Image 1 (cartoon, helix red, strand yellow):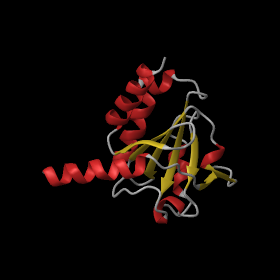
Image 2: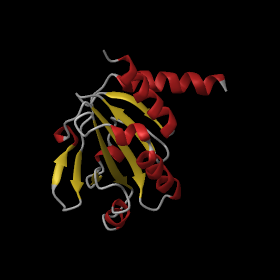
Image 3: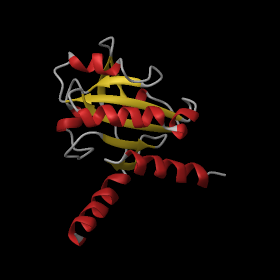
Length: 155
């Protein structure tokens, strides 16, 4: 158990310092880059359209008082479909709040890139205004708590 904890701590330390940017495709098929999303914080919600746990995860985000209370200039939520052929994710995205930015990893930049590493979905990645990774994990409550702490520490 201790070895796993140490690995996770080292893993997070390595990735927290770097900024990320990906090519994505929106619901209309237009390409954009993650760096085009401008907000104080950006929450990436990485999911698979066939994942039952991902449906619950989206519901957790949508039902969060904290997440829904922050205006878009403070928090942008970007749902990104992974492992999809490009057909099913649009139907799934329709069930998520329309205030979110919905995208598809059309070019597999996230899957085959080395900016983020994960072994399961859903995954939550909290980015700062320069798209630096502030938190990455599989627990919504953990990312929500991390954001809450950051907001409380602001002057």
